[in-house]
Amino acid sequence: MSPSTRVHRFDNGVRLATISMPHMASVAMGIWAGGGSRHETPREHGMAHFVEHLLFKGTAERSAEEISRHIESLGASIDGFTVEDHTAYQVKGPAEKFDRLFEVLTDLYRNPVFDPTEIDSEKQVIREEIAMVRDQPSQYLDDLISEAAWGSDHPLGRSITGTEESLERFRRAEVEDFHSRVYRGRHTVVSIAGKIDHDTVAAAVAERLGDLPRGAALACEPAGPPQARHCFHEDGGQEQTHLALSFRNVHRHDPSRYAHKLLNVVLGENMSSRLFQAVREQLGLCYEVQSDLVSFADAGALQIYLALSPENLAEALRAISSILDDLRTRGVRGSELEEAKSFVIGQNRISLENTSSQMMWAGESLLYFDDWIDPEDAHRQLEKVTLDDVRAAARDAFDPDALCSAVIGPAESRSALAQWLGR
Image 1 (cartoon, rainbow, N blue to C red):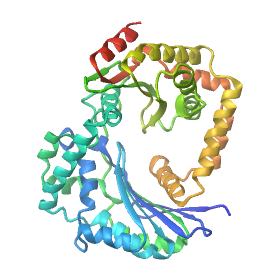
Image 2: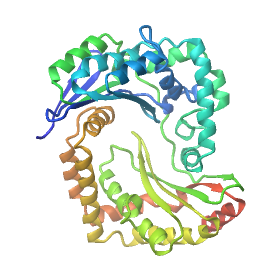
Image 3: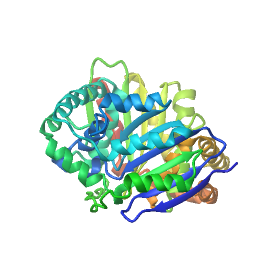
Image 4: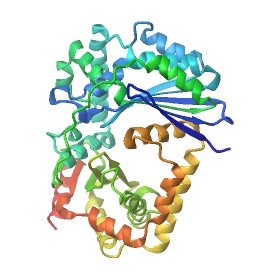
């Protein structure tokens, strides 16, 4: 039985998507605020993530313990996350408990109390989170490659968690100001998937969020032009070198994004990819190697990650160069392209068999494109991509003059990378 999706727009700007899946026993619900770390001022560095944490610390009606206890006593779970351009809050639970779960979720979203005691205690929690990231090279590398790719003075180049120094500056009035600026109708998207009725959900959204002030547009610093930047964090205690390479890529509205997606699959998104087969399977130089796409409204990046012994870095970089050069000059083989299409479409269809993925797809569609994108329409766009399209994407993507890098490891890692970059 195929899901049925409907979209409703409220007068205050709130956008709702419902995905009816009557054969399911659960419901997945999400509320997005269309503001994240790139909407912060320099003084607010880390504020979006901080506010996300504080929304779980209590409302006028519920304490932090009562929020979690209420959700879990209904057989459900709740979570939240912050990224560069939005913040999201999600609940999944039994479909028959929808009303009570949605009431808690919307109370959390719009009625936080921002108790000064909780503000102080949560600063310490995030300090521990920052320290934990620093102790995990694979996570810290994400911050370093963002800084290299976008610049330390740009919001996209700053860590989402903020720093100990930026946290110290936060006061209750500033927290309230950020929440009142971002958590407004025009920036709010609601997505509900599962055994639900559209009219019932729309009525609940109207009751709980219909009077949310519309709010003003959010300021957002545009992404700057690509530049070659490099970050190195020396850590002699590491047995491995952790490397990230970043190339500027297309934004999420670019028509060529489908070709870039398939290029990334061929390059390093799965175990059949060129990076995995050459660097890991054939040469045995590492355990982990992959590539990912990062997309924003005005820019994107294609990034390569690998972790390996320092003595293997030079050979691995030569192998990566060979792969990238071949993709730029020859493109991909017909069989590779067809396999990449089958992989992306098949994985997406499998994912959309569950309520959480349907909720995420519809919510992000509204947030990013202001409309629901039929997954099959996206699949048809992927099927249209030609070998020439992918070759053009590779020539556009792998510009050596705009390559950015980040490395965590012993000193010899830096010298190996510098020699490779010099060539």
